[in-house]
Length: 366
Image (cartoon, rainbow, N blue to C red; front, side, top):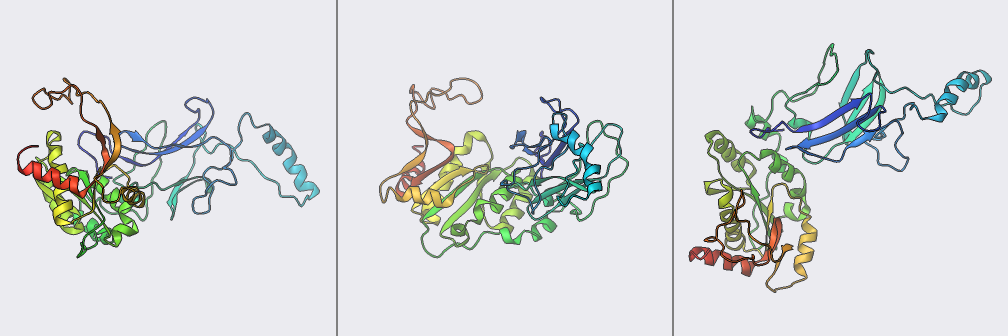
């Protein structure tokens, strides 16, 4: 995945086997994803086989069983295995295996990408499977990193992309035609969704395109979603952004330099686009790391009919900060409390409120 300046690269798959677990002191295999230092929910394999009712990955269990120090049944299985073979019992005998890694022991690890997730085999035996997560796909991989107390003898890779999209963007875009935005409808739309994004947030936009923007209401143009992106101070970022906008057809480039203090201008641009270009009944603003349940949003908005509407996670009697990064001066807001407002990651307004915002902005009252 694309690296953001000054940050560690995202981890599409973090495979972390440890001979002594972080808190248990016992062998463990942990798998996870990480983006911008935000870790997902870890999958931990600690020697117990996944439950029979747990979802599988391409038919494989997420965790296989291995012999644990506190497994009372393991000694019995070792002492009775040969006896069961000699007397020819018909009942299938289960042979337990040790933890697949040991200090000073050579091993061959195979990582395979299936339809539903990754599968790890050690010395030919399946150990664990990790389901894919939205936005973390193998086609976006830029490299393989091996760290820790590990002596690598050889690495062999097959069926991986030859270059990363940031190195060969046009070749990468040619593979992604199915993520293009559908054409705008001739008539009005029920909901317009404006998504705040930044020029170098290609990975975030692709995650949105591949997830909730595939909703049938968006694909049929009953709901329209567009990214709103300001210009970057780096020419190469703007060049790639223009190519991306031309290809996918879902980006509105607003004509000013990207700056947090000017984020309100993106909100105004979303309102203007929603009422003048789309003539939408409802307008939603969200961020590019927000997951939108499109059908639930429309269902909630319809409860209010034609009334003026402002829906979101509302804040009441919130006081402005007067110092620090998020400081608001008395000239900007002299009152002790803000009026009620919704948190920025996502809120919905009716078209009449959006029209009012645009009109007040044009009168220089905002």
